[in-house]
Image (cartoon, rainbow, N blue to C red; front, top):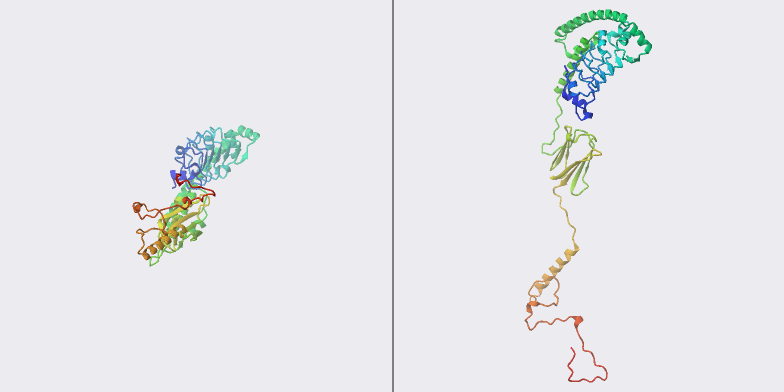
Length: 427
């Protein structure tokens, strides 16, 4: 028996960020649900409820949904229309292909003043004489029945003949109840004896073939048995899958060398064009959640888990794990892993401005070694220059420094110049 759970409802409410309180529409079809419960408490603002193709046998626990406008319960095991009086806003009700034989239960919808469309196609009550006329007369608020519009003249005729039509319908309903009760007793007895005796020790494959080859009646009990067979088939297939051993991927060779593995079968691009790093570009799916990806960079290999599947690549050189990075594009979804080489050394180009002084210093050292009798007592860089040596300021033999621009030459006397001895010389 499948029960309605919070996880099931949240899964169906993904477009509302999994919030249940403000939810206005939900589809719980084809979930093999057998009972309606909890929905009116979790989703009080619900307007559209789709629960077709389930195994629901009773309409219940919907009286708090005051805003419900559309209810779809087609292809279920419902036999009576009930418990919808308080759904004040109900506008459309679909009960196609159920087992409603009590046509009098339609009268429970008389208080649903907003009900305009009703679908009862495929139910046993549609085989009754004057079925359509009885429903139209009982529910004057309807504008269409089973997809056909109701004309004003048809409505007037049905209202006029409703008392007589109702007595005829009640007679047919009693006959159906008697037949249905005998059918229910007979089917339960046959199904029970079949499973206790015939199907007990039978091979599952033979049992499936025999079951689907037999003719069956259209009844709620048969639908339950069909669902039971389907569940058993699913369980047997799951057991067979569990028996088959899953392939175990060997990640390393006997000598420790990592293998190249591409279990998810995705395209990728590995580039070693850069001298100092490797770049791995994985063409991941654009809308894949990043939480499903796990990256592990090791010195000689890189491993990426993509939804549990392994992608592993052996690197030609060792990389620095601490300087490796992994980024993902928000537009394309690609995963780019950048791995720095651990043994890479950056060679600097020689600088001319630095090489010249070194050569000069070497030459100066050689010149100092060769001139052992030189008066220079200190190692200097560059050729010797005649500059002032302030350490020998008191030495009388100090070389006089004269700047070429300051050299003053005596001016030759002009013609007819007479030297006066009393006048001092000009400096």
